[in-house]
Image (cartoon, rainbow, N blue to C red; front, side):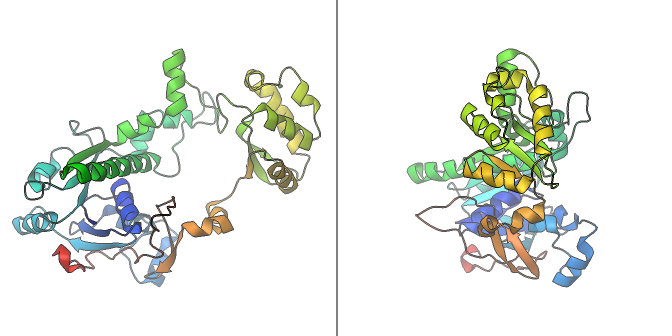
Length: 378
C-alpha cells in the first residue's frame, strides 16, 4: 500500500500514520515551508528539541507523523506538479486537506490525478464541505457544532473547548472508514474513488445522544459539567478524604445498589428518590450532594478497589503522564526513535490476521527524503 500525504496539521496526518502503522509506505509531501505544525511548540519544548537535535519536529508534529518519509515539493511550480503526477500514477491513496478550489489550482485534485491512475483513492478533508470555501479549524468547529456549549461547567457558565482537537480526530476516523470502504469496493470493481469528509459533518455525526435529545424533544440539551443528562451518577468528579479525585459511571440500578453497599448507605438504594435511574435523574442535585459528602469521608483508593471488585464502573482522575504510565497503556506506545523518547499509536485495535508495526521510524525532518526510499515509488 502506497500513500501520498498532501494533508497537513492533524486530521489528515493522523490517517497517514494509521496506515503507516499497518505497514503502508507513506510519503508526506510538504511545501518548502513544511507542515505548519512543525512550528507549533509549547514553552517546555525548547530543551527537548535541542536534545533531539531536530528543531523541525515539534511534539504536535510528532503526534501524527511517525513512520513516514518527507519530500519537499513546490506545487505552485510546473516541476513540482510534474513530480506529484509521477508519484500519483503508482499510488494507492492520496490524502489531501485543501480548501475547496485550491487542489484544482495546484493540479493536485482527484479528477486530474485519477486520469493516469483510475485505481486511485483520494481522501479529501474540508472544513465545511466541497462547496464551501471557508477554512475549517477545530476550535471554531467545536464552537459551531455545539460541543463548547455542552462542555461548559453548567448552564450560564463559559463554554469550554476540549483540550485536544476532537473534531479533527473525529474527521480522521470518518476518513479512515471511508478509505477502507473504498479499498474494499476497489477489490470488487477495480476502480478508485473520491472520498470527501468535512469537519462539520464529522462533528455533527458525533453529537449522538445530545443531538437525539434535541430532535426527539425539541429542547436544547444544557451543559452539566462532566455529568450525564440521562444517567446519574455518571461522570461527576468527587474528591475523597485522601485527596483522590474519582468519577462514577453507574449505568444500572444493580450497580447503584452495590455502590450504596460499598458506601455503607444501603438505604439510598431503596429510597424512592434514588431507586431507579429515572428517579435519580429527577433528583440529581439531592443525590449528588449526598454522594459528594459521603465520598469525602472515605479513602478514594480503597473505594475504587472495592468498586472494581464489585464490577461497579469507576475510575481515578489521572493526568496525561499518569495515564500513559499505567501498565495497560504500554501497548499503545511506540518505541523511541530519532531522539524522541516514545510515540503514541493511532491504531487501537488488534487482529488475528495481521499485526500493527512493532516500531516505526521517527517523524521525519523536513525534506529528509530528497527521493522516496522505496524505489518502486519512483
